[in-house]
Length: 471
Image (tube, rainbow, N blue to C red; front, side, top):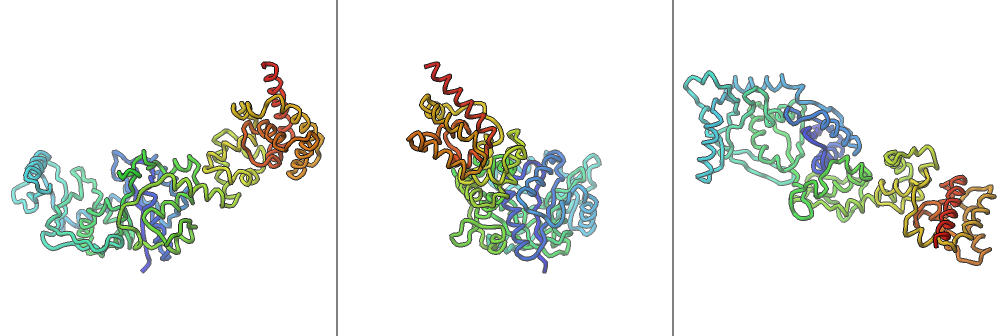
């Protein structure tokens, strides 16, 4: 049997953390077993589904690298097929028209809740004999078996048994004829040959209903795996305040996709004590049966730690590929300046996010507006004027603008003046970068470039003179 999994989001918002984890688990299961991963857009909710949300989902999947083998399929393009199945169920007596008014259903629900009963449809129209009212457009209900049970051998939760007596006759088509979720998902899974349905456990109660419909259609149900929800650190259901934002927000915030994937795969699954997983290792080791039964807790600090690890250890070319976009957001063209890979090498140990790396690297590509106040107060003092002037003179005459020569130039100035190298390097660093922290002074000089370095030293000397005059 060829494994076929699917990810079927509703385009009513962005691709969030929970959805991304479900997509990842489904993708890994397919990749591990040489199967196919299908993307399906469940867009029958016309009031809430938007083209923008579809684009956001596709953008998130692309950024994460969760490539799909088939799709994306749109449910709105399959309406004729759903109507065909609904008519088949009606013709075979496995579904029926229900003319109950909203008022009757509301009254029924109120009475059941007053008796502390589970609210459910009472089957009033199931064996209706009298002529239907002419002024009511009926819904279509599935005729749930009155006896027996549905057994689900869930790959995560184990065997679960649902009594049919606890299930009511669910609506499979609204009064305007549009199919409902439980009908469309069954038809789609059937037609697309889905063998394994991996989804959140908020869908667990839908599973016996969907299995009953599949059985009515003479089909074998897929294997189900319901993964627990993700909680915030306070134990509440994950929300925006915990970090349940769009996957693409993590992109904008400077996270690497591999860091987010590594974090997501560990939300409810583990392989020994291993924390860091390459994509190939995820595919090799992941087993849906090893997913925990209990909910997972989202930890923003752990995600940030992982992101810093990947920034430090990834090939510079890989980081440069992503960093370029973040520099663009600062209105910097990375082609107009030092090689981006060289900048990455200089900054990999210094940044936790790509946003941070872009911000601390901007001075390599353009002059800055202001000095960091504390850095200027400490290092751009009148006493620094002589070291800065001497190092400027040496740098201006330097023909070999490479780190080794630049390092030696700074050392020689310090030796000539009989001062520690830091007394030269720190004022020079602030002059070049506007702050007290940067990569090694030789690397900083090399990447800033000769013309910009001399220009910025002149500016710092003018700043020191102005400061002396104001004293």
